[in-house]
Length: 176
Image 1 (tube, rainbow, N blue to C red):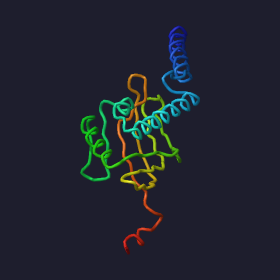
Image 2 (cartoon, rainbow, N blue to C red):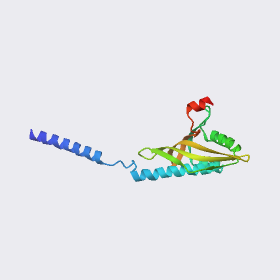
Image 3 (cartoon, helix red, strand yellow):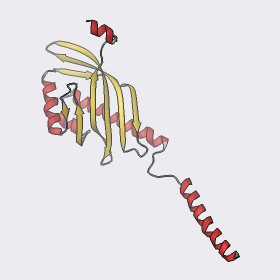
Image 4 (cartoon, helix red, strand yellow):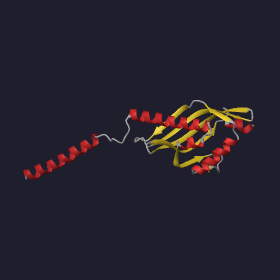
């Protein structure tokens, strides 16, 4: 009987040790806090580089920061872009109305990233000044972008941009 009990104890002890080792082991795929900070900085670099390429009206440069499978949502409810070719047409149409533009510094940047550093959501504000026909307009945009790692690099897979309104209440806007 003691042999049977001793054999069972060894079995349970082995299982217990394996469970403890598994529970205490670190998952190498998960980012450390320092790695996450570095990855978030890389996301910001991609967003800035994309904005700079947009400023320069350089589509081929913009493509470097875009995923092969992308979706952009326009301010028009019917405007949903699901391919690079559709995106190019929409961007070139926008650029026809603009002589030049300049983005300011990104503010209120919030980035949420999965624990493995493969997917990120970024939301930020950014001033944008546009010139067209000798006139200029200053806007403040709220931008949301989703990025993923593709070939070891962060690329934008989706986005939406909104032009903020003056700080009026809905009631004030409705009364106009």
